[in-house]
Amino acid sequence: MKKRIFAGILLFACLAALFGCGGKSRRTVGTCAGYDILYEELRYMALSVRDNMEETYGAGLWDHSASAEAHRAELEEEVLSRLSEEYIILAAAAQYLPERSINDKTTKAAVDAAVAEAIEALGGKKEYKKFLTDVYMTEHLMRFELAKAELETALGDALFAGTELESNTAFSTWLTKGNFVRVRQITLPADADIAAIRQALKNGDTPENAIKNTSGASVTAPFYLVRGLAEDPTQEEDAFALNTVGAVGEAREIGNGYRILVRMEDQTEAFLTNQASAFRKRLREVRTDAKLSEIGSTLRAELNDYGRSIDLLQIK
Image 1 (cartoon, rainbow, N blue to C red):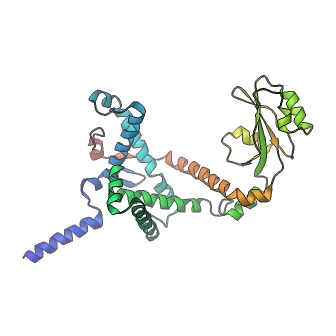
Image 2: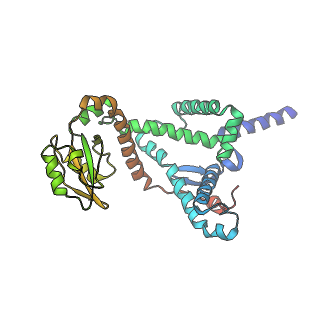
Image 3: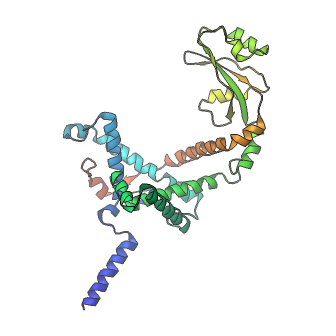
């Protein structure tokens, strides 16, 4: 009889481990993109957001009921917003990587390797567990985050398969089809004699000589712009409008002054060898972010009755 009872206890323990019955931390508090949101994730997000809000509004924000209540709505909205963001990668992977998941063998192997690396870097399992506690995470939640990071890497490869961003070779070929330009930028104060400076540049004068008598003027070293990467779209527009070496752009008003771009001779071989891969990486990031933002705009975390009953101000 005792053996049967003991066997039953072991079976229950095994089933609990198998199906993730980890007590309160594994209890479902809501859903997003068809996935369950667990209490451990809600707790992590609430405590993290509370820390961030203390940095904004001052220490002790949550110590007094009046100040806490005054920021309750902001806290709840920010937590829901961040929970929604947490599932963008999974929603994108479901669309572009249907053969992959956070539980497939490849993902699990990558997560195991990442955890082992973290344990070694932190000095052991004890230190790793302390780290998790310090950042409000559980082992299960950390593995969830690492799995998403692995899927995000694979997602980039899937998004750009067959495009100019698929490989460095494809990207280099794309660049040489008019998708990069080398320029210098001259910045001028509002009272500068723009016409005289532009004429000097057109006559072949160097940017340094063209602005030498203009107080407050400056000029950059030559730099490259790749189509689709300029933080200022007008800078990219002006740069790619310069069709020949030595071409001088129109003066563009910026803030309290003006900007003039001058087309420089391309150093194609050096650029492709030394800089192209970094630009490819950045452009992949920009386009990935744009795609994820598009997907994320349709996602919204929804708490269930249990989730809504949790007071985010009281989570410890």
